[in-house]
Image (tube, rainbow, N blue to C red; front, side, top):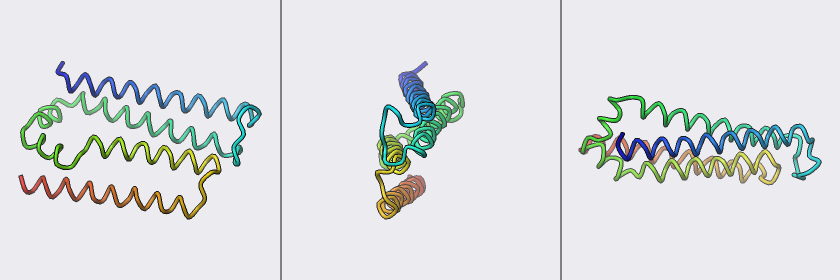
Length: 143
């Protein structure tokens, strides 16, 4: 198993652990009914933590599926793919998007983020996804 595959598996394990912790905290919040942690919206806070936990688990499953697909690993080791990955900043983009969406969900569902701020953050996410997709297409055609 090469270094990149091992790294992806470690990252997926880390995401799985994070997802399980978020879901466990959501269950704990739901069962305690806000008695030990106070949020402005304790009624929907468990939903936010559960949604973030599920997103983390989905990302972990996706990463594991990529390591299972031999053709994807061969294409990933292709020189053109390495250049495309370097040019578009795929790893930084994924981390940034995951952390920003985690922050948005947690702040919204705990009641600390109002509607206007939420829409601004979602607009930033949408713009970053559009820029990322455009960069992937552009550099994919250029090379």
